[in-house]
Amino acid sequence: MKHIYITRRETFNAAHRLKRDDWTNEENERVFGKCCNQNWHGHNFELFVTVRGIPSKETGFVINLKTLGDILKDGVIEKIDHKNINVDVDFMKDQMSSTENLAIGIWDQIEDEIMKLGGELAKIKLVETENNYCLLYTSPSPRDRTRSRMPSS
Ligand code: NI
Image (cartoon, rainbow, N blue to C red):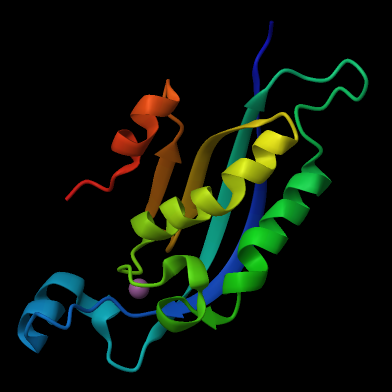
């Protein structure tokens, strides 16, 4: 059996601010830098979602990329594009709006829908700037998944 990894790209732009209310302004600025700007700032994000599977005999597809695009639009893009991540996005409530946490939030938004189509969500790449991006991978077993997806601190 040949397993294929196939990727859909979507883009969105969104505002955020990284700040801890329990820290002083100096501490926030030292750790978060420009991402702590008090009047918010935006990023043009690129989202790459990779699905793993075996091509269907009938269609030759691992997953229909148009359908995957619709899942991403409904579950993620509609909720976040041109929005403020800290205040507008339900799946990011009460979390630091870091790229890492955003990737985890996006994963949880789309994983079940992809599984319903017979695919396996294998990887998310979330690009925040041309110099910074993060990767989130599936784990070997469901039991390990939660632990390995915890952001490192
Ligand atoms: Ni930022």
